[in-house]
Length: 176
Image (tube, rainbow, N blue to C red; front, side, top):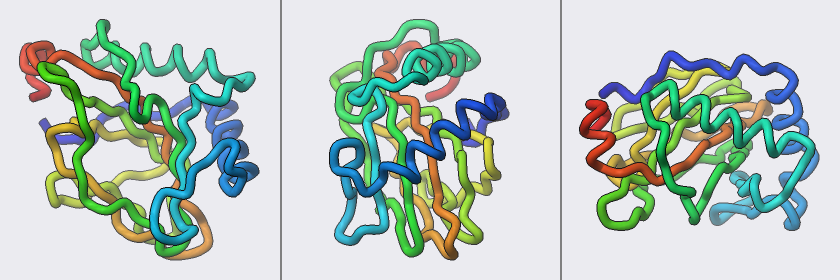
């Protein structure tokens, strides 16, 4: 399975709310955690901070996973649905994420704001060319994933919809 998906983030109003939330709150420890050794990478577990768009986010996760044929999943407890913000020189270092036995930590990610250069997702050591509003699949507990460094003043902003999906279901759908 190639990680790039043909889903786009077409809800411009929700996209603008998410970008606004990220840019207004990234340095507020109530909402965002600095995720790295420097103040270049932040993330917020969105379900920990109810907003006027929380229900839309939950519904869109169900809709996007349904497009893959996944209609039954468990809440992913470590990161859930998160908003990630990387500024100049910010990047995601190579890693995998945990999942309970028989499950896969599965993520559908959308690039809401693409930096001037860089910020490309890397899955299994291969950079993926993603444009704004495009998406990719990440079997985060199986595939090593990362991102390239952000170059320029425009941040990389990603919404990541997480779920725990049974391995057998992913195999049945030929996603694993």
